[in-house]
Structure formats: C-alpha cells, structure tokens
Amino acid sequence: MFRSRFLRVARGLRPRVIRPIDLIQPEPLNQRSHGGAQMTQLDELVAVRILPADRGVPAGKLADIELHFTAGALEGLKLLGFTVWEGRGDKRPSVSLSAKQYVVNGERRNFTLLRPTGETQTPDALRAALLAALADQHRST
Image (cartoon, rainbow, N blue to C red; front, top):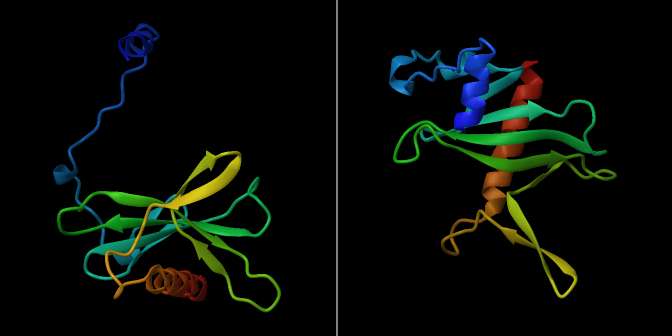
C-alpha cells in the first residue's frame, strides 16, 4: 500500500480523499441514480439497486441486484451477488441468490450464503420482492 501511494504522489497524482458518510447529504431514494442504476426502497430497512446487464455478460443474464441497508445495525452496508436470469420458454425470470462454490471429490457444489433462520421465512419471498422491483423499474423507464 505504501509503495502504490508513494508512486501516485511521485507521479503528481493525489490520493483520493474519502469523506465520512455523515458529511454527505444524500438525495431522496426515489431520485437517486448510480451509474444508470436506480434505487428502489424495498421496505424501511432495505433499498434495491438494479444494475442492467451490459455487453460481455453470459447469455440470459438480465441484471445484477444489490441490497442496500438504509437503517438499523447494517445501515451503510450492501449485500451483493443477486442475479436476474431470463426465463426459459414461458417461464418468468428467475433470481439466483448469493452462493459460494466449492469442490468436494471433484464434484462442484454451492453453499448458499443467504439462508432462512426458521421455517417461517423462505428465500422465495425475497426472490418475489426482487422480481417486483425489477418489474417496477421496467415500468418506470
């Protein structure tokens, strides 16, 4: 880190200044735009940022989704790794959740990072909410 910082200063480039989040006056969520992606408030704790798929992505990939926590203990953090895929045939689009791939005895497996804590909440409710946010974004554009 010291060396790269030294090289930037030696070349006459200043290191980027990072301001504390408290000093930034955010715009209302319904007007916030980040690099072409619109933020949609999912509930009082979470906002959804949908990043449309651009060039050079796998066939069938429609968008990436980020969950931004706007209140509570996780405020200021985001959860990545959600992807919207095109539905096959007459099926509607599907959402893949964050997962870690690993190999056991030559067999590739996935470990889902977002899991229900009990039997009451399933990832299907989250998938439905993310698809609804995607549909809302398409209607508004």
